[in-house]
Length: 451
Image (tube, rainbow, N blue to C red; front, side, top):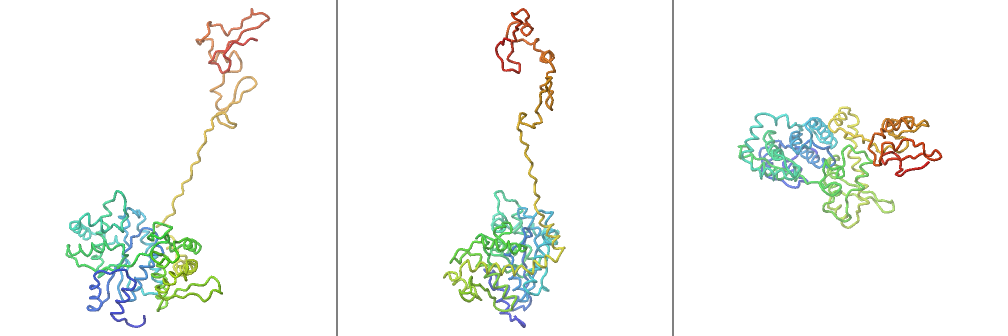
């Protein structure tokens, strides 16, 4: 919008596309009666990598800046650590720096002035003695039930919750005071924390603030778009081929408008971004599949697009290629800036190091000692001795006498009848002799053999 904006124009831009607002009289008092810049803070826990869903709050921050507001962005590194250890403490500082790069680049790509934008690191003041004392004071007036309820939709829910999940919403409440703002902005999923802040800050003698909420854009799989679920989001650094693959698989039921993430993305991101860049109404262009099918479909408002979609004039097969093209173009400036910044790339590798690939240990198969090539195999030689690693276990000598001596057979108690059963018997007719093999010997002869 060119030229100075009236108070009503500012309010209209601030409220545009919001899902809900609480205590808007505070905002109107600042802009209309006090006639000063509205101070707003938006916080984000520096956990997973930001995705395309971040364009929704970025568009609203751009609106606030266009309306003359002063914006403080809180990189909530301590919140990231408290939220069920989503961000390991040794990575928190790198992730906060990564978020700083991403958010600044996103806002610059929307062609909005960022001279009234301030980025604040949570740990820069949340570890002070004064803040800690105020946190204790807040703990003394907020029940466990209320703290748990407030963080139910924001803090990761587990079977055995940690105390850190109760501290999280209390710190977010206290941040309004320490950032010295008139209003806090966030997703509608934070409504319960905003309500807690409105009710509890006056109990420790701090003023209440207004709260502005943007809608939550459904993810690609139909649920909430989440940084922890790769299939539900498009990463801001995803290449064009990956974007195309993800969007082609995205949930987009024909003729269904409610809960359709593709339509929501067009409404809250693509149309709004185009309007910000061109300084007028946003346009979303859908090319026909064949030239003979007619002129492209051009939408300047979401109501017409929804009507055509419900009537099956605009189909998923037509809309998805248009969204793919728009998203690739949308991310191009940010990705080019990333490729040109060695510092940003270095921070990315430190903030989100690739997972260590564990080498699969080769399982040694124990095939016994009988197969060819076994370490335990032995080889018998013509003279009677054996060779191989296990020769000591089976070697009995090089002759019969030595073998018998090694076996110590004649000294063992045998189940036959004399100590001389194995001695040669020379008085047998025709020189024959009897050999009796005890069962314990390594031969399968259990009876007398005559030679």
